[in-house]
Image (cartoon, rainbow, N blue to C red; front, side):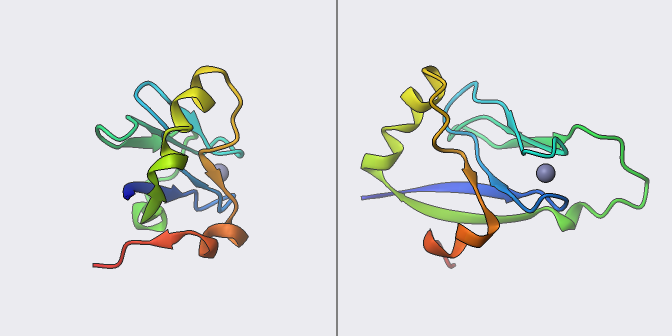
Length: 101
Ligand SMILES: [Zn+2]
């Protein structure tokens, strides 16, 4: 069984990030983009001042399919601050199964 998770890519550092669980507010390594909401909802925004011409469509998104056994690790990963999940380097994104509509 797979679970769909939306990941967003920071247009500056190109890291893909996702919120692992409720209350998992996290930012990308460069501190521009944040995500929140776990699998209940997706809230995201910017943490740095950007110009009026900032192109929000430069924030790319994908829906990835995660094995349920991996998803079970997300809550303890967040709760015990192990922080093994939630960041995906751009060079690794192709290793993940993507939901295509
Ligand atoms: Zn970034």
